[in-house]
Amino acid sequence: MDKQSLTDPMPVTTPASTFSIEPVSGSSTLRGRLPLRRFLQRQPVSPADLCMPLLVHENEDAADSVVPTVSLQRLSVEVRELRRMGIGSVKIFCGGSVRDDRACEAASPDNLMNRAIATAKEAAQDMAVMTENCLCSYTHAGNCFLTNADGVFDYEGTLTLLSEQAVQQADAGADIVGPAAMIDGVAASTRQALNQSGHRDVGIMPHVIFTSRLYDGYRRAMNAVPARGNRRAFQIHPSCPEQAVALARDFLAEGADMLLLEPALHSLDVLVSLRQAAEVPLVPFSVSGEYAELTRNGTLKPSEYRAVLLERLTMFKRAGATTIITYAAKQAAGNLEAS
Ligand SMILES: NCc1[nH]cc(CCC(=O)O)c1CC(=O)O
Ligand SMILES: [Zn+2]
Image (cartoon, rainbow, N blue to C red):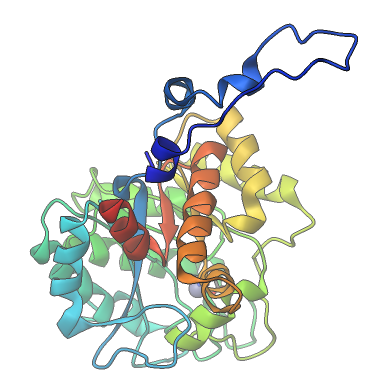
């Protein structure tokens, strides 16, 4: 409950009515009455509703990034602090250091991603550690998938490598893997690989991704800019919500445990319709461009930013989000702690 609403009771007067019809219910004026306003209010957003994306770099934090980044060295401290603030999950993203045509580093047991997972898990056992499962940091072309020598999409090779990558991540301690290459069949092949390697209890949260320029800040920070063009081949055009819903259904039929939707703000309609159709956790990802828009447009004072951020997160929650992935998770948790 914000202090404002405790100290600012709304005087309700009943003016001589100029309407010929008396309202049947007092439902709008009830809100002026403090105990009723409180009674009607749903559970507000809490730190436990938030997931912090961690863009991990080997050495230095990326100074010019529009979104927060963290070095491997600082990761333990960061994860412990987030956990202390009540945040229950982190989603780890890592760049690669070696690119080749077969994206070999993606499934190397001691790549940065796997070391970061182990570090995060060691720092806070009860923090849910989620990963991104993709190839764009490891391929020459910056694509999320493999291609053959002739440039044609290699479906089987991609699924095999993504499954191997997921198993390595689970071995390192990941609780939930996140296939992000937008390839159907990936949830099924990942499930099978996890089960066969003794990771039946590791969850799968595939990404359902609309094409967007709101990813540019992330791609720059993570050195994951596609070599040609701004779009990724399998992402869904913003005009095609039915494709997103269909892909979401396919992933669930394949055995996905939950779904990530991005960009959060540009996929709200899909969140709402999936919430009505499927009893599964739905997780909007408020991506780098959304964070940049809120923090850097220069028109919001700090107090306005905090209030708008809370409104934004509340809106995601009421639209049906189970958890919200946001670069503002730490700030929001700090504000909620302070209020
Ligand atoms: N590779 C998939 C992926 N993983 C994270 C983001 C963007 C996240 C953000 O903008 O915060 C994307 C989209 C993309 O690169 O096309
Ligand atoms: Zn990718």
